[in-house]
Length: 523
View (cartoon, one colour):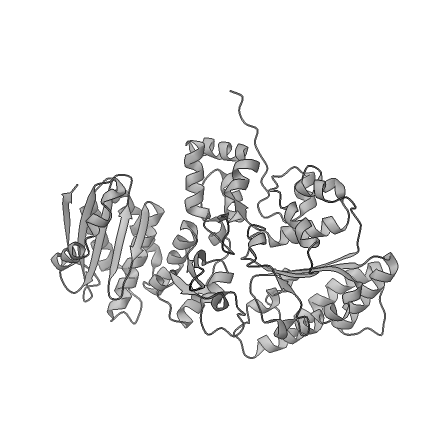
C-alpha cells in the first residue's frame, strides 16, 4: 500500500490566507461565516477560551469582507455567496495590548489607529482615540462608498490581568470604553461589527451605550463555530486520523478514542456536539503523540491564585450545577469563581435540565484535569516534582497489578516529602491524596468521588478495577468496611473487569500512609 503523504498542520497559525495559500489543513467553518454575516444583527460578540480559533475566525471574516474569493475555493461559502462585495475593514487585534498601564494602552491604540490613518487619512482636530476611530469609519465610508466592517479580536485582553484590581481596572476600562464608544454612533456607516474575547464584561462597563450586541457565545446554532467536532474529523480529517494512528501504532478507531479522552468534551451551548480543543488536536496530529498542548501553552498562574482566593479545594472544581447567569456572566466583579473557570475553558457544559433550567458544569477532559491537578500540587508540598515522579513510579507498579508495591512506594516517598505550612488539618491530606490518585489518570482511567469527609477512588486499569477508600487516623479495616457498606463492588459488577477493594489509612502525624488492606476476593 502506498504510504500516506505528510500533512501540514496550522499549529498556532491564525492567518487564513497563509493556511489556504500554503496548503495547511483547514477545517471548513465558512458556512458559519456566511450565517453570521447574513443574520438580522450586525453587531455580534463571541466568547471562547484562549487558543480556540477566535483569531482565525476573525481573520477569515476579514478575508471574506475584502472579497478575496480565490481563498474560499472549494469551501462551503463558495456555494452560498454570489456577490463577493469588497468592504473596507478595520481589524484591531487587542492581544498586543496585554500587561500595559493606562499610558501604555493609549500608546498601543495610537499605533493601531495610525496604521489605518495612513490609508484613509486623518484630521488634526481628532485628538482622542474615540474621535479618531469615528473619523476613520466616516472617511472609509465616504472614500469607498461602502459600509465599513469593524473586527475587534480579544477585546478584553487589556483588562484580563487587572480584572480584580480596584486601582487599575477602572482606568483601563475607561480607556477601552472611550475607544469603543463610536461603534454605536457610527451605526449608519457600518456593515458588520464582530468582537471576540475570553470573558464577558458587562456591556455598560465597556461598550457604554452599545447595548444591541448579539452574544452568540451560547447560541446552539454557533456551538461548533470554534473547535473541531468528531463529524468534522471523520469527514474532513479522515486521512489525518490514519496518519496519527500510524504514528501511534494503533488502529484509527483506537487513535480517535485516545484523542477523545484527552481533548474532547467541550460544549458551549446545549444541545451541542462534542467539541475538541483545536490547539491540542492539531498539536497531537503534528507531533504524532498525545501531550498537554493547550494546558502547557499557558501557565494558569492567575487561575491558581483565584482558586486559592475563593478557597476552592481540588475536589470542588468540577460537578457544579448552576443557572446560565452564574457562569455566562460578567467577570470583573465576580463573587464566585464559576464564570472564570467556564469562560477560561477549565469547566464546560456537560448536561442541562429543561425542567430546572440548571446546567451541569464539569472539567472537559483528561488534559485539563491532569494539568489542573499538577498545578495545584505546589499548594501541598514544597517540591511537587517529587510527587509527580512518585505518580509515574506508582503507575508502573499498578499497571503490573502490584498495588501493594505502589502503596509501599507512596508510603516511603510521602514520609520524606517536605510539606507546606498549614497542614494540621484533615482536609489538607484528603486533597493531596485526591491529587495523587487523579494524576494516576495519566496512566489509567480515574474517577474520583469525594462526598464530605472522605476521598473515594474508582480506578480502572487495562486489567483491573480498583475501588479505594481513604481514611485519616482511623484504620485500613474501617476503610475496607466503608466500601462494603456502600456496595461499590456490586455497582461496578458490569464493568467486565475483576474488582479489587483497597482500604487505606493515612497518619497525619507522620504525613504518610499508616496501613492498608487489599481484598482480592472479587478477582
